[in-house]
Every structure is written in C-alpha cells, then in structure tokens.
Image (cartoon, rainbow, N blue to C red; front, side):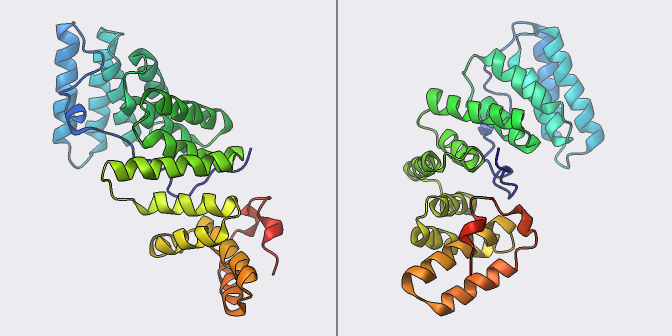
Length: 269
C-alpha cells in the first residue's frame, strides 16, 4: 500500500461539528435514563467551560461521558463525546470509542462517520486506512449532498492508487462545497492539484498548486508534485527557465526516498 499523505490533509479533514450538536442540543440516541442524561449534560457543560482544554479537566470530562454511556449502553452520543475528549487528550482509545458510537448510531450521524474516518487516517496503518475508506464510502451513500465523503475518498485515493476515481471525487467535493457557498480551503485546492498531477494533467495541476503555493510551499508533498508539474509543463512548452525552476524545487525535497515509486521515474532532469 502506498504511503499515506502526511501533509495536513488528514488534520484538515473538515471534522464536522454542527454547533447545535456540539452543544448537546441535538442527539442521535437520546437516553431515556435520567441519570445517563444528567451525566451527559454535566460532561457537555464542563467541556464547554474548559476553553483552555486543560488536560486534567478533559480527563474528568471523558470519564463523565463514559459513565453516561455505561449507565445506558445504547447512548451513542455519550460514547462519541467520550471519544472526542479522548482525542483532545491524544488518547489512542478515541478511535475505538468513535467506532463503537458510529456502530450504535445505525448510519444516522455524519459527525460520527467523519470524525471516525479522520481519526483512522491519523493512525496511518493499513487496517485504520481501510476503516477510513469504508466510512467515506458510507458518507457518500448515506449523506450524498455532503462534500465530506467525496473529499475523504479523494484523500485516500493516492494510497490505494485509484487516482482517477480520486480526481472524480475531489471534483464532486468542490462542486458540493460551491453549492453550499463554502470557501474552498487550500487543502482542497492542494489535493486537487496533487490528483491532477497523478492523472498526468500537469498544466491543470500546476494551476491548482500555484493557488495554494504560499500555504504549502515548504511541504514535502507539495515540492514533489509541484516540481513534477513544472518539469512536465516545461517539456510541453519547451521552457528551459521553467525546467530550472522545477529542478530548484526538486532539490529542496529533503527526503527524496519518500518520493512515491510511481513518480520517481518521471522526475528525470
């Protein structure tokens, strides 16, 4: 399996939190158990008040949410917020909580699926990446109007090598973001440029990468795909100056052994 993109895309994966859900005003598995709801509401209140994300209070809050879940083991929201607070503590058990919460919710929550997929990508191993891809496919199936599933599929496509489908999905994500009047963030433009390059659409890829140059110019993956696009466009246009620029960026790649095997043969100067 190809190496996962470790270049902020997995961290800018648009981890969804509707404001009303985050405040505990809209639940997917509201408990009928009064004690479970009391504990959950206490957790929401302490989480909201802990604006500095003090680890001591985060740990206490995660314990309260988990007690709410233990009081009513059908209470998926309590388990999700257990995972969320554990994630803020960089606790690896967050993934298991997210996974169980999503299973309990029976495909009702895009928040659960998106945060589960994002956390699975952070783990970066083969099993967790499979979970992420599966969850992005589920988001596409159950929440087709959301950009998040298409975006996530596109993030994972360089790993699986289905970059043609990845390009289709990032284009769908961009279309959905535009319909919702969301401003396109640089991570979306970056990913679009990478996938254009991997599909040998070098001129279009270069155009996209130029748009996010200031944000990602120091990123290793940006240098790899930017130098590739510059080189290939210079060959098309017979532009020696552009070729020299491509070489300059290629030389800036610090870990050349990390260049994907399918790209190495293309970077011949």
